Length: 276
Image (tube, rainbow, N blue to C red; front, top):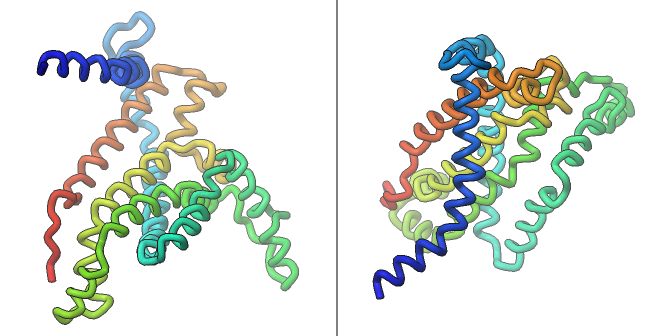
Protein backbone atom coordinates (compact mmCIF):
# COMPACT_ATOMS: atom_id res chain seq x y z
CA UNK A 1 0.00 0.00 0.00
CA UNK A 2 2.80 2.41 0.84
CA UNK A 3 4.46 1.74 -2.52
CA UNK A 4 1.19 2.43 -4.32
CA UNK A 5 0.77 5.70 -2.42
CA UNK A 6 4.34 6.61 -3.30
CA UNK A 7 3.74 5.98 -7.00
CA UNK A 8 0.48 7.91 -6.85
CA UNK A 9 2.20 10.91 -5.27
CA UNK A 10 4.96 10.84 -7.86
CA UNK A 11 2.44 10.72 -10.70
CA UNK A 12 0.45 13.56 -9.16
CA UNK A 13 3.58 15.70 -8.91
CA UNK A 14 4.77 14.88 -12.44
CA UNK A 15 2.90 17.76 -14.20
CA UNK A 16 4.34 20.26 -11.73
CA UNK A 17 7.86 18.88 -12.17
CA UNK A 18 7.53 19.03 -15.96
CA UNK A 19 6.24 22.60 -15.74
CA UNK A 20 9.17 23.60 -13.50
CA UNK A 21 11.66 21.95 -15.82
CA UNK A 22 10.30 23.54 -19.00
CA UNK A 23 9.51 27.04 -17.77
CA UNK A 24 12.02 27.55 -14.92
CA UNK A 25 15.06 25.30 -15.17
CA UNK A 26 15.46 25.39 -18.96
CA UNK A 27 15.23 29.23 -19.16
CA UNK A 28 17.78 29.55 -16.34
CA UNK A 29 20.15 27.24 -18.18
CA UNK A 30 19.69 29.27 -21.37
CA UNK A 31 20.39 32.53 -19.51
CA UNK A 32 23.55 31.08 -17.99
CA UNK A 33 24.66 29.73 -21.37
CA UNK A 34 24.25 33.04 -23.20
CA UNK A 35 25.92 34.90 -20.32
CA UNK A 36 29.07 32.75 -20.23
CA UNK A 37 29.39 31.59 -23.82
CA UNK A 38 29.86 33.83 -26.84
CA UNK A 39 29.35 33.13 -30.53
CA UNK A 40 32.00 30.47 -31.09
CA UNK A 41 34.22 31.93 -28.36
CA UNK A 42 33.71 29.23 -25.75
CA UNK A 43 33.55 30.07 -22.06
CA UNK A 44 34.11 33.78 -21.39
CA UNK A 45 33.53 36.37 -18.69
CA UNK A 46 33.52 39.30 -21.10
CA UNK A 47 29.74 39.59 -21.06
CA UNK A 48 29.72 39.74 -17.26
CA UNK A 49 32.43 42.44 -17.37
CA UNK A 50 30.40 44.41 -19.93
CA UNK A 51 27.29 44.13 -17.73
CA UNK A 52 29.26 45.41 -14.73
CA UNK A 53 29.79 48.70 -16.59
CA UNK A 54 26.14 49.54 -15.96
CA UNK A 55 26.65 49.79 -12.21
CA UNK A 56 24.91 53.17 -12.10
CA UNK A 57 21.73 51.72 -13.58
CA UNK A 58 21.87 48.80 -11.14
CA UNK A 59 22.26 51.22 -8.23
CA UNK A 60 19.40 53.42 -9.45
CA UNK A 61 17.12 50.42 -9.86
CA UNK A 62 17.89 49.10 -6.37
CA UNK A 63 17.44 52.55 -4.83
CA UNK A 64 14.10 53.33 -6.49
CA UNK A 65 12.76 49.84 -5.78
CA UNK A 66 13.83 50.16 -2.12
CA UNK A 67 12.19 53.60 -1.79
CA UNK A 68 8.97 52.31 -3.34
CA UNK A 69 9.01 49.27 -1.03
CA UNK A 70 9.47 51.41 2.08
CA UNK A 71 6.65 53.74 1.05
CA UNK A 72 4.38 50.76 0.38
CA UNK A 73 5.21 49.38 3.84
CA UNK A 74 4.53 52.71 5.56
CA UNK A 75 1.16 53.06 3.82
CA UNK A 76 0.13 49.42 4.05
CA UNK A 77 0.97 48.62 7.66
CA UNK A 78 -1.62 50.82 9.42
CA UNK A 79 -4.14 50.14 6.65
CA UNK A 80 -3.71 46.37 7.01
CA UNK A 81 -4.01 46.61 10.80
CA UNK A 82 -7.21 48.65 10.60
CA UNK A 83 -8.57 46.25 8.00
CA UNK A 84 -7.79 43.23 10.18
CA UNK A 85 -9.76 44.71 13.10
CA UNK A 86 -12.91 45.36 11.05
CA UNK A 87 -16.01 43.22 10.99
CA UNK A 88 -16.15 40.42 8.43
CA UNK A 89 -18.55 42.19 6.07
CA UNK A 90 -16.52 45.41 6.15
CA UNK A 91 -13.32 43.44 5.55
CA UNK A 92 -14.76 41.87 2.40
CA UNK A 93 -15.76 45.28 1.06
CA UNK A 94 -12.40 46.85 1.82
CA UNK A 95 -10.48 43.91 0.33
CA UNK A 96 -12.48 44.29 -2.87
CA UNK A 97 -11.59 48.00 -2.97
CA UNK A 98 -7.90 47.18 -2.44
CA UNK A 99 -7.92 44.59 -5.23
CA UNK A 100 -10.14 46.60 -7.61
CA UNK A 101 -7.24 48.35 -9.43
CA UNK A 102 -5.67 44.94 -10.08
CA UNK A 103 -8.67 44.01 -12.20
CA UNK A 104 -7.58 46.56 -14.78
CA UNK A 105 -4.74 46.05 -17.23
CA UNK A 106 -1.29 46.99 -15.90
CA UNK A 107 -0.55 49.17 -18.93
CA UNK A 108 -3.84 51.03 -18.61
CA UNK A 109 -3.20 51.79 -14.95
CA UNK A 110 0.26 53.13 -15.75
CA UNK A 111 -0.95 55.08 -18.79
CA UNK A 112 -3.58 56.76 -16.60
CA UNK A 113 -0.80 58.24 -14.48
CA UNK A 114 0.77 59.72 -17.63
CA UNK A 115 -2.48 61.63 -18.14
CA UNK A 116 -2.55 62.73 -14.51
CA UNK A 117 1.11 63.78 -14.20
CA UNK A 118 1.66 65.30 -17.66
CA UNK A 119 2.55 68.97 -18.18
CA UNK A 120 -1.02 69.50 -19.35
CA UNK A 121 -2.42 66.76 -17.16
CA UNK A 122 -5.09 66.72 -14.52
CA UNK A 123 -2.86 67.76 -11.60
CA UNK A 124 -1.28 70.70 -13.42
CA UNK A 125 -4.74 71.79 -14.55
CA UNK A 126 -5.92 71.83 -10.93
CA UNK A 127 -2.78 73.67 -9.85
CA UNK A 128 -3.40 76.20 -12.62
CA UNK A 129 -6.84 76.97 -11.22
CA UNK A 130 -5.20 78.34 -8.06
CA UNK A 131 -2.35 80.07 -9.91
CA UNK A 132 0.34 77.43 -9.37
CA UNK A 133 2.49 75.49 -11.77
CA UNK A 134 2.85 73.98 -14.19
CA UNK A 135 5.15 71.52 -12.45
CA UNK A 136 7.30 68.91 -14.14
CA UNK A 137 6.10 65.66 -12.63
CA UNK A 138 6.26 63.25 -15.55
CA UNK A 139 9.58 61.76 -16.72
CA UNK A 140 11.10 61.97 -13.25
CA UNK A 141 12.28 59.44 -10.70
CA UNK A 142 9.47 60.54 -8.43
CA UNK A 143 6.94 59.53 -11.09
CA UNK A 144 8.60 56.10 -11.34
CA UNK A 145 8.36 55.58 -7.58
CA UNK A 146 4.74 56.73 -7.63
CA UNK A 147 3.94 54.23 -10.38
CA UNK A 148 5.64 51.43 -8.45
CA UNK A 149 3.78 52.27 -5.24
CA UNK A 150 0.42 52.47 -6.99
CA UNK A 151 0.82 49.22 -8.93
CA UNK A 152 2.43 47.12 -6.19
CA UNK A 153 0.69 48.45 -3.06
CA UNK A 154 -1.85 45.57 -2.93
CA UNK A 155 1.04 43.08 -2.86
CA UNK A 156 2.11 44.63 0.45
CA UNK A 157 -1.35 45.03 1.96
CA UNK A 158 -2.57 41.46 1.41
CA UNK A 159 0.32 39.59 3.13
CA UNK A 160 0.18 41.97 6.09
CA UNK A 161 -3.59 41.62 6.37
CA UNK A 162 -3.47 37.81 6.19
CA UNK A 163 -1.00 37.71 9.12
CA UNK A 164 -2.60 40.43 11.25
CA UNK A 165 -6.04 38.86 10.92
CA UNK A 166 -4.74 35.85 12.86
CA UNK A 167 -3.68 38.03 15.82
CA UNK A 168 -6.45 37.64 18.37
CA UNK A 169 -7.74 40.72 20.16
CA UNK A 170 -7.21 38.91 23.46
CA UNK A 171 -3.44 39.09 22.87
CA UNK A 172 -3.59 42.88 22.63
CA UNK A 173 -5.89 43.05 25.65
CA UNK A 174 -3.46 40.90 27.65
CA UNK A 175 -0.60 43.22 26.70
CA UNK A 176 -2.57 46.24 27.87
CA UNK A 177 -3.49 44.44 31.13
CA UNK A 178 0.22 43.89 31.71
CA UNK A 179 0.91 47.61 31.45
CA UNK A 180 1.47 48.24 27.74
CA UNK A 181 -0.16 51.26 26.18
CA UNK A 182 -1.61 51.09 22.69
CA UNK A 183 1.63 52.21 21.11
CA UNK A 184 3.71 49.75 23.14
CA UNK A 185 1.29 46.92 22.35
CA UNK A 186 1.61 47.73 18.66
CA UNK A 187 5.42 47.84 18.75
CA UNK A 188 6.06 44.92 21.11
CA UNK A 189 3.21 42.60 20.14
CA UNK A 190 1.76 43.33 16.70
CA UNK A 191 5.03 44.08 14.93
CA UNK A 192 6.84 40.87 16.05
CA UNK A 193 3.82 38.72 15.22
CA UNK A 194 3.36 40.38 11.81
CA UNK A 195 7.04 40.12 10.83
CA UNK A 196 6.44 37.17 8.45
CA UNK A 197 3.87 39.29 6.59
CA UNK A 198 6.30 42.20 6.45
CA UNK A 199 9.00 40.00 4.94
CA UNK A 200 6.58 38.50 2.41
CA UNK A 201 5.26 41.93 1.45
CA UNK A 202 8.75 43.37 1.01
CA UNK A 203 9.72 40.46 -1.23
CA UNK A 204 6.53 40.67 -3.31
CA UNK A 205 7.01 44.42 -3.89
CA UNK A 206 10.77 44.73 -4.20
CA UNK A 207 11.35 41.89 -6.69
CA UNK A 208 8.93 43.14 -9.41
CA UNK A 209 9.85 46.78 -8.70
CA UNK A 210 13.57 46.25 -9.30
CA UNK A 211 12.95 44.45 -12.60
CA UNK A 212 10.15 46.61 -14.01
CA UNK A 213 10.55 48.33 -17.36
CA UNK A 214 7.03 49.43 -18.33
CA UNK A 215 6.70 51.86 -15.41
CA UNK A 216 10.14 53.41 -15.95
CA UNK A 217 9.57 53.71 -19.69
CA UNK A 218 6.10 55.30 -19.46
CA UNK A 219 6.58 57.48 -16.38
CA UNK A 220 10.35 58.01 -16.31
CA UNK A 221 11.12 58.76 -19.92
CA UNK A 222 14.32 57.75 -21.66
CA UNK A 223 16.59 59.47 -19.12
CA UNK A 224 15.69 57.18 -16.21
CA UNK A 225 16.66 53.72 -17.40
CA UNK A 226 16.31 50.82 -14.97
CA UNK A 227 17.65 47.29 -15.17
CA UNK A 228 14.46 46.05 -16.81
CA UNK A 229 14.77 48.66 -19.57
CA UNK A 230 18.40 47.69 -20.15
CA UNK A 231 17.55 44.00 -20.45
CA UNK A 232 14.61 44.70 -22.76
CA UNK A 233 16.84 46.79 -25.03
CA UNK A 234 19.30 43.90 -25.44
CA UNK A 235 16.61 41.48 -26.60
CA UNK A 236 14.00 43.63 -28.32
CA UNK A 237 15.58 47.06 -28.79
CA UNK A 238 17.93 48.48 -31.39
CA UNK A 239 21.03 47.47 -29.42
CA UNK A 240 20.37 43.75 -29.87
CA UNK A 241 22.86 41.75 -27.81
CA UNK A 242 21.35 38.63 -26.16
CA UNK A 243 24.66 37.69 -24.53
CA UNK A 244 24.88 41.02 -22.72
CA UNK A 245 21.17 40.87 -21.87
CA UNK A 246 21.62 37.39 -20.39
CA UNK A 247 24.61 38.58 -18.36
CA UNK A 248 22.63 41.52 -16.96
CA UNK A 249 19.71 39.20 -16.18
CA UNK A 250 22.05 36.80 -14.38
CA UNK A 251 23.51 39.59 -12.26
CA UNK A 252 19.99 40.79 -11.45
CA UNK A 253 19.00 37.28 -10.33
CA UNK A 254 22.06 37.10 -8.09
CA UNK A 255 21.24 40.50 -6.55
CA UNK A 256 17.63 39.47 -5.88
CA UNK A 257 18.77 36.13 -4.43
CA UNK A 258 21.21 37.86 -2.07
CA UNK A 259 18.57 40.36 -0.93
CA UNK A 260 15.99 37.62 -0.36
CA UNK A 261 18.55 35.58 1.59
CA UNK A 262 19.28 38.56 3.82
CA UNK A 263 15.56 39.20 4.32
CA UNK A 264 15.02 35.60 5.41
CA UNK A 265 17.42 36.18 8.30
CA UNK A 266 14.88 38.62 9.76
CA UNK A 267 11.92 36.30 9.27
CA UNK A 268 10.75 35.03 12.65
CA UNK A 269 7.89 32.95 11.27
CA UNK A 270 9.08 30.00 13.36
CA UNK A 271 9.35 32.05 16.53
CA UNK A 272 6.05 33.19 18.01
CA UNK A 273 7.53 34.67 21.14
CA UNK A 274 6.40 38.16 22.01
CA UNK A 275 8.53 40.46 24.14
CA UNK A 276 6.30 42.09 26.72
